[in-house]
Length: 504
Image (cartoon, rainbow, N blue to C red; front, side, top):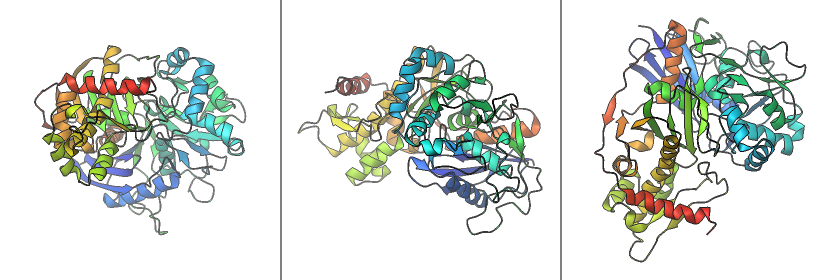
């Protein structure tokens, strides 16, 4: 049996799955936690990767591995391979002003034409602009800008800071893939190349792609963009991270240096690979953030910025809308109501569709779609009669899902094919989420069996790199809620949202 491994280095944790390369069957898995926050030092990801590999039984018998990671996170390196500051993550909104400045300087329409997106605080380009303006002493030391999965892949190959990595700080070995590059704001899905003028506009310095000897001297290095199915290199025998106690990393003794490294991917592109979706499928993922995405054969451009026209990890395109607030909406309201997730579900299902007119606008962490980085959550429509625990619980589920349904509407407005909706993520196991989703979304809803689909997609890449052929693994379905579309829910939500949009 040939085994491959996939890594999902997400906001909250690192997950590792080891699969049968022929069937996609899960053989074993492991995980480790990441610290909370909107900025995290990448060393935490490195240690968590070690722990997750160890928890998964090591990689000594694995032929290939690939790393998918949270998109947009800004990893700044100096010439010696040192991380200059904690990485600003996708959910760090301090660069909202930088996003507005970049949009004003280039124009939303022109940005969308050149990169498939319009700047918001999530994207890497806005974060490097923020560092340029707010931390010039750090900006002056930057020799390379990478993303989370780029940095982890580089470290697994044995590269890293001088004195603490087997091969040292060779920045020319940094690599990424088209899906993750497309979330930076300075790479074009349409042309398949970096837009170096936009990077210079954002950071104030010249840049070049790793390995480009013709680039300007002293330019900031950007990771080389690998083709789908390509090999990033091989895991260095001593390249595994330490376990935090000074011991050799998991698998270091058994790995022989023959483990092939796949190209890696952004997390949502990884999930698309793991699910094996095709045109007509729309995925709604309910995790720390909420995402709505599909795969298309042609690039998408949305000058409003609601939909980002990313590339996927298989050679196509991944139009996506993202909300900052998803599963944590439910946990926040559950805490207020002093119930667990099961108790929240029972309360929510005791209320009627529309929650008696109660609406939660779930902008606890600001919001990206719509672009309201400074907004806060608010309850609307409360009266003496409607102010019940059941209505508030249901409003939490409806509000979270209505925020995501705005993403499905935006995709359909761009004429993205939409025939069924796949609902994934840990919060989807809540029965209230499943039932209410069938009332919020107009599309037929299906529930894939629970699984680590981002890590599974990375494992697809690993198998692809090992065999030279993209595997076609079956996807198991867990259920199909009975269609029960209730337009009252979305009408109430739009009415409450209008109060925010108008400043009331």
